[in-house]
Length: 249
Ligand code: IPE
Ligand code: IPE
Ligand code: MG
Image 1 (cartoon, protein in one colour):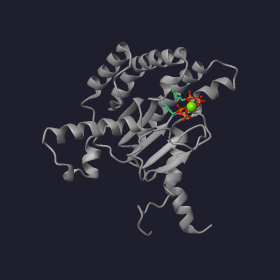
Image 2: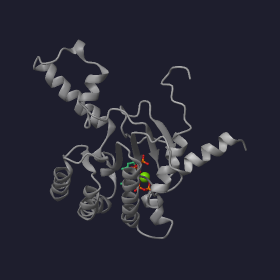
Image 3: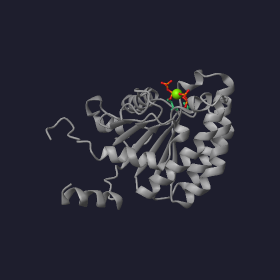
Image 4: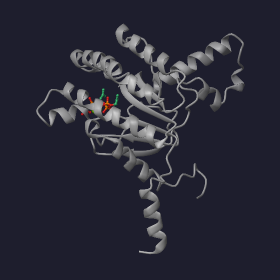
C-alpha cells in the first residue's frame, strides 16, 4: 500500500466524507422485518421509528442540507384498512414523541404531499411540527406523506395552468425552472442521492422530477434495521460515483 492510500484512509477515518447536500430515502421493508419474525406487519412500522431517529440525527451530524423520507404514498391507501389506520395514528404519535428532540437539533420539518384524506388529528400534529420548527436553520427534514411524484406534478401543472388562465403567465415562458418552482418544496428541485432499503429496484412514484440526475443506492437492509451507519455507508459509496450530467468526465 502506498503512502497516498494511507493518507486517504486516514482522512476517511477523520470523517472527511464529501457529504451530499440532499438525500431522499424510500423507507421500505417494514412488513418483511415483521413477517420474518412471525409478527404482524404493524410491528415492523413500529420498529421503523428507531431507524427514523437514528437517520435524522446522523444527517444532522453530517451536515446534510435536506433529508426527505417517503413515509406514505398515494398508492398506500390500497392497503388493508387496519394497516392504513395504524399508519395514520402511529405517525401522529411518532411526531408527538420525536419532534421536540428534532427541534433541539435545529431541524426544520415540512411535509410533502396532499392534505386531502389525511385524518384531522394527524394533520394538526403535522401543522404544529411545521410551526414549531419553522425558523430552524439546520437540516431540512421533509416527510413525504400522502405523496406521489405524479400527483406532485399534476398539482404543479394545475397551479401553472391557473396562472396562464388568469393571464399572469405566458405558455411560452414556462421553463424547467417554472416547474421546479411549483413543486411542493421549490427550494429542493434536485436530489444528489436516492436510497431505497429492502432491495427493490424501483422508484415507486417518489420524487419523479427531482431525481432526474440523482445517484441511486439500493441496500438489502430492511428499514427497521437501518441506522446512521448505513447512511454513512451509502454516502461513502456516493463518494466514488462520477457525476458528469451527460458531459464527459
Ligand atoms: C414501508 O414498508 C412502509 C410503508 C410503505 C408505509 P412496507 O410496509 O412496504 O414493507 P414491505 O415492503 O411490505 O416489507
Ligand atoms: C414505497 O414503498 C412507499 C413508501 C416507502 C412510503 P411501497 O412498499 O409502498 O412500494 P411498492 O409497493 O413496493 O412499489
Ligand atoms: Mg414495501
